[in-house]
Length: 109
Picture (cartoon, rainbow, N blue to C red):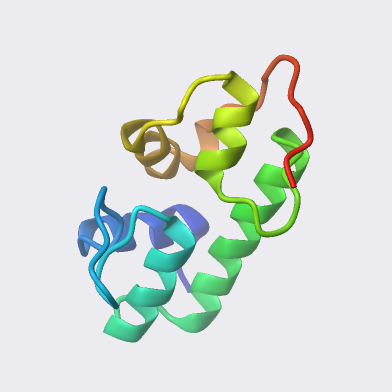
């Protein structure tokens, strides 16, 4: 089984995580992209579930995001500026060094 980073890398390399949406192919939301890449056969369902859980735990712990919140919403709330696709892509490309310190983070539902 792949690590979380390897799973993100596989999804990105397959073109599944992009700044556009194409049904069952690409998405700018990583959790959707993970599901699409399970459908495409790039990653397993278990790998997708582990990666989705890691994203949810990250958002809950460091961004105070509630269930159903997306990374774009959580980062935008944490920084006060609209999160860009490039910022989110950078997080997924280097998951071990994702930002963990934010100031004045409001709770996002």
